[in-house]
Image (tube, rainbow, N blue to C red):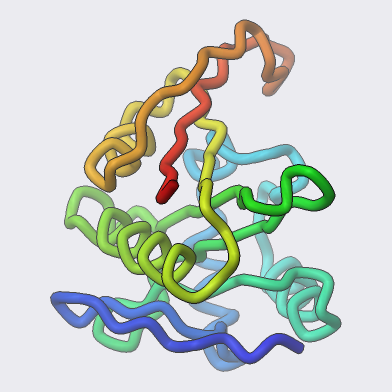
Length: 176
């Protein structure tokens, strides 16, 4: 298992390894169709405690390398991940995240993305971070724009979600 560094931000927000004691609360937050609507189909919906336990097992087995819980005042609020790419794309990583409804609109995700972006560029051999944002997910796009990401492309009808094709906005931030 990768040792995850705790990243401390403003307003009692920090990123740290997900603790087994937080899985029940995490499953309650993640069991929201609005979260699943903005993520890949591999994200379970409904989301149960069993799903949270399976997710933690993937982390503990080293199958997911960079995963942090997003904590507000030491209470889990969501999850943020970084997936380094390979071969000729080894200088790039994909960022992914979700946050529970009680934390919407409070700047928590903007702070979490800022923390992870700063850590990535200063501590890892990554020079390009990207996210594929569903065209209808304006909140996620705003979080990234606030953090210095720009829209590099629109991938037309690239996503098939719940039987409907959607555009995907490719959001990018580089330090080179």
